[in-house]
Image (cartoon, rainbow, N blue to C red):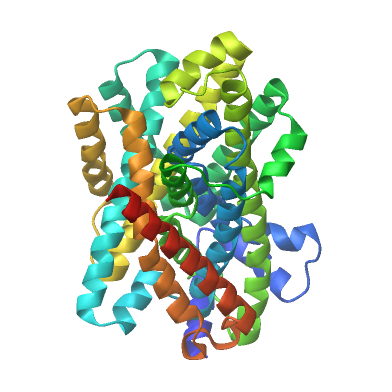
Length: 432
């Protein structure tokens, strides 16, 4: 109790004290309705950016162009799984006051902890490649600058975004949330311009289909681009000390508000992902351009098919996605390193190091689109590590207290994890 009182006193001096005070009023029942919910909106907006990053552009464009609307069910299923998983990650931070990597370091064998750290860093590298390349491509196509110059510019801009951390959690949440709003608005505009056949969209949302090996590869990429390993680690870090509950009753109330944050943010991200694919299906597949398989080609084809305005809106959404997700990826890298090994490096060092693989890809002349898709497959293969550890902790009362998973959620989370493991096994079999 003394620790909780001390934490509360510290929070009162926090730069986000107004938001924290508003949250306290909501927890105590003195604020109701939308005013009670607003102070808790934020962590999931940051996590949701990982679900609309350039990797999603890559997999959704390829999936929609090659197979029309037939993979929409995969996008819907992946986003529903993401909603459950991010809810567990947020709950872990609230219940334990620690993020997932910290829990692993405190309660798992040392050797296993280092293996998990290695897998997490590999996933972080794949994430950074996708996000940097996406932002770089958008700058390159939008302003006509060289790709390597665009990569350096993206690195500088994302570092500037990360400096908002110094002002507390609220400014960064609002800024990243603004990027998410821009991306969503862009796809509302694109949907209006492309006018997809809604009957086909709805039918394929609920009709499972997997055809050839390439469609399975894309399905794995869609899952990897949607349920992101680094988003799981980061989300638990965003909630661990944002609003510190004084007791289990308060923890339950904080979680109930935070659950609304998860549902709202994941619903927006899911809608954007679906619109990415059905727009690609409508514009490319339905017009006989099923061979469109990269972002640059998609942009160039949009101009004659839908006009320059639609092409420009597409690039704006890609730029917002790349810059914001790159910043979020760096935040996740900090949580991973500090949590697993207790080691922190300056943000600018982390930002510089994570730029190097992207610069190497650009310098090598590799196809950026193929690198984007392959990076998402790497993420899908890395996903079981955070999933299994997340289930291990959230299923145990000694860690979670009153927020332990109920029996039905335990089985639902296990089913989701099993489905991802099976998909990965099929992917490896096809690759072999």
